[in-house]
Length: 397
Image 1 (cartoon, rainbow, N blue to C red):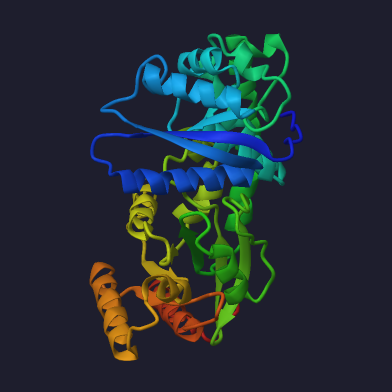
Image 2: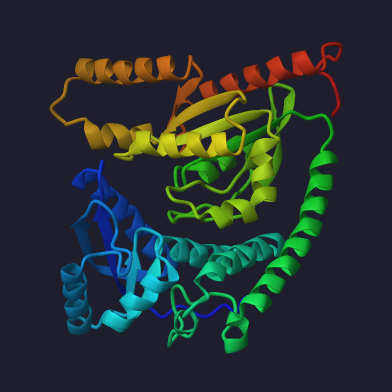
């Protein structure tokens, strides 16, 4: 099993990112905001951010020599214990950077894996995360002992193995093989459980992480579902039976997607993501108040395409409209102008989604009745096609 170490209180960290071709400084700043949120979720305090404009990362140190020297001087003068890069680093890059700055260095994937390891609760989630961690370190084994041996534990150290022999490639491969077999057994049990749910239509909540899926799940299913203002608050799929207007269906809350989600996590969480693949309807929840919500929509749509689930009926739910209005509408705007701007926004996305969208605020419970109506109508459409001779309003599933 993975050795879980207690994170130091308020581990001081700096963030490092590149402004690459095709990116604006504003975009990169927003990406760094997300990285800072990830770091906060993992238990770190971000002290400073460093960015550099480069066409491509340096093959040896990711950033240029001058920037690395600047980072080194700051780290040594401000008692920084952790450097976090927004992009994936190779094993040699990690070692070269750590040799120069003399403190623990991790990348975005390592940080996300650390959060997943911390949040894993069920046996399935723990095995999934452990498998992803071993797959992550396998290509980085050369010189990785220093990376695994980082003094003091903390973020990025919550990984598999603390003894030198566990860095041996053969043993890591054997461990990966064993975890895959164990996960296959768990997946088989999960598949059987899904099959036993009967003929009920299955609806799954999907979306970028921290957009309010769990809050909406609680509202729609009238049952408490864990939610907090941190990324990846829950890793395990929660499923509830819901009945709207005498129409029953199953509603599932799934793990949130994120930009640059490590490939190994997607692979390891296949069984969890099967809830998305096997769903009849997807409810794509969007945080409309986020400045890059359109980019987040693109990330989720791309992930759904990779999961071969993009061709399913999708209802896009534009959540947090109360925050959207507070963020983008000045106090001096007249109510008529506000209504015109909201109408323009809604018409745009009705065109983009072919009318399959709803604008709500889960926290304020605005437009929830309309959302229920849209969901139940879509569920009934599928029931009518799948079970044309069954009265779904009175049937027992």
